[in-house]
Image: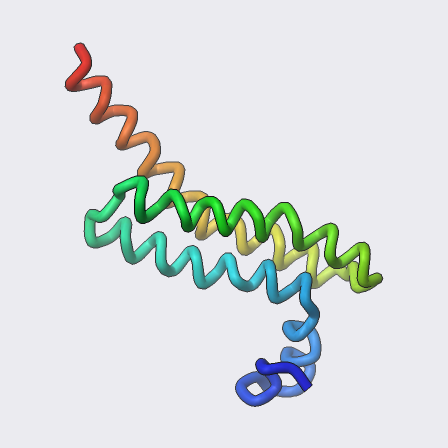
Amino acid sequence: MGFGAFFLPGKLCRVLTQTANLLSAIRFVLAAVSIAAFMVGDRRPEILGPIALVASISDFVDGRVARRMGSVDGFGRWLDGVADMPLWLPLSHARRQQERFRSMYQS
C-alpha cells in the first residue's frame, strides 16, 4: 500500500500511487509553488530555476516510466498534459518579464 493510500479515496488512490502518475502530479505541487512565488513578486532565477528543472525532469521521465512499467493509460496522458499548464504559464510569463526588464536597461 502506497503512501497516498492513507489520504486518497478508492480508485483515485490506486491511480495516483502509480509511479508515472505521481511524477506528473508532482508538477501540480511545483505549479502551486511557482504561482505563489510569482504572486508575491519573487521571480528570481534562484527560485524559479530549480522549480523549472525539477518539473522538466518529471515531465521527461513520467512517460518513460509509464511505458517501462506497462502502466500507460488515458488518465496518465491527460494528467501529463494538464499538469504542464499551470506550471509553465507563470514560468513563461516570468521569463518574458525578465527579458523585458533586461532590454529596458541594456538600451
